Amino acid sequence: MRARMPHDIPERLVRYEAAIEHAPETHAGSWLNDYGKGATRLVVDLGCGKGQFLSALAPQHPDCFFVGIDQEDLCIAYAAQKAIEQGIPNVRYIISDANKLPEQFGEEEISRLRINFPTPFPRAKHAPKRLTYFDRLLVYRKLLTRNGDIILRTDSQPFFDFSLTQFEQAGFDIAELTRDLHATDPGLLSTEYEDRLSEAGARIHALRATMAREPAAEQTAKRSLMDYLPDDLEHIEYVPYGMESAVVNFRNRRRKEARRAARAGKEDVNRNNPSANV
Ligand SMILES: C[S@@+](CC[C@H](N)C(=O)[O-])C[C@H]1O[C@@H](n2cnc3c(N)ncnc32)[C@H](O)[C@@H]1O
Figure (cartoon, rainbow, N blue to C red):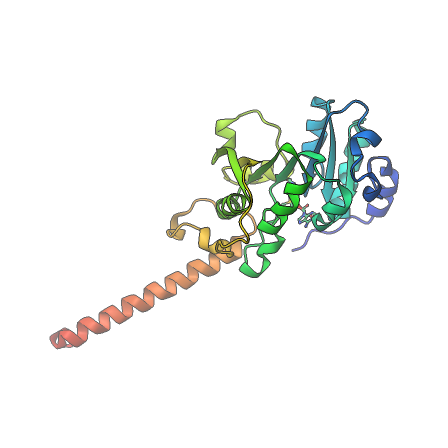
């Protein structure tokens, strides 16, 4: 069942609009000048959700200015509400699709791009929508400062492994990597999805990528996230967010294949050993 959309989102967007930037393109190249008030680093949270993470992170880092971007106005309404109610001066939110980044930020302007629990889009044909797809990484390269980096967190092992191929081919080095962030680095601030998915049994995969080499001409990795799942799907303890139905279908297909193979094997035995039919 779909969650019901609260009716008051338009009113909330107006009530908390002081934390929302409606004309982000007018700040491209000058975010820190326009808003920074002494901040020296611009940090962007792409697909920021309802702002739990930035609301906790921004007050700890007055030397940074934070911009949260999400395509859902509901998310930005709640994120902006947190910023206003908590009186956080160094954050603004944008309702926008990630495709618009090059219009909204100047070249070499972003010090750090955070991508937390991006929508996985498991199917091969939707791979370009993933926020870590090769073409997008090439765009981020232009917007990041020379020493800039990208931090990715996800519950999804297949998404993470796919992303590693993309970072590699887009000319990034992986400066830090963990398959269990909460064990490696307990006490870090968490996002809404991180809390929810950790409670459901997820281990959090995380990496920090820095620009290292010239990118490849194109990406050549397999695009379906099913290709990055382990072979033994029967025994995986945690099914990544957004891949539930894909994993169920895949498991059923494998079971059917196994049953068919077992039946074919039995028929072979019977054919080779007619007395078995007696
Ligand atoms: C799974 S949620 C994660 C939210 C938050 N980062 C967290 O960790 O709790 C993914 C978010 O990314 C947003 N999103 C997905 N694709 C996007 C895109 N192309 N541009 C902007 N936002 C996007 C969705 O609207 C959603 O709020």
